[in-house]
Amino acid sequence: MIQDEVGVAPRLFRAPYGLRWWGLDGAQKQFDLLGVMWTVIGHDWEWRADRVARLVLRKAGPGGIICLHDGRDIQPSPDVSEMLKAVREIVPVLKGEGFGFETVSELLLPTAA
Image (cartoon, rainbow, N blue to C red; front, side, top):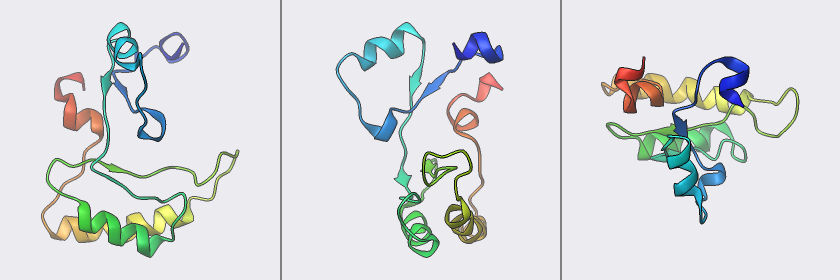
């Protein structure tokens, strides 16, 4: 359906809530999807920015994947202010430590650009 609507076939898949279930491997193979998880999940849907930032900064590492969300709730206009505050704290610290930032596609599928 995604390919029909936007003209691009998905290549990556993150299981909702990080939960894998029986039959998922077969579905991923059928649709040629690479399963991707995270190194650290920020709990940004439930925590304040300072706590999210502390966790991410403690667990971030080379080649890691940080999972943050673009909405705290399922609603038309979610409040993302805490996540954005956390990002404003996280990014300068990690840059100062020499880290760079890439999308998951750039990290895992460099030839797919």
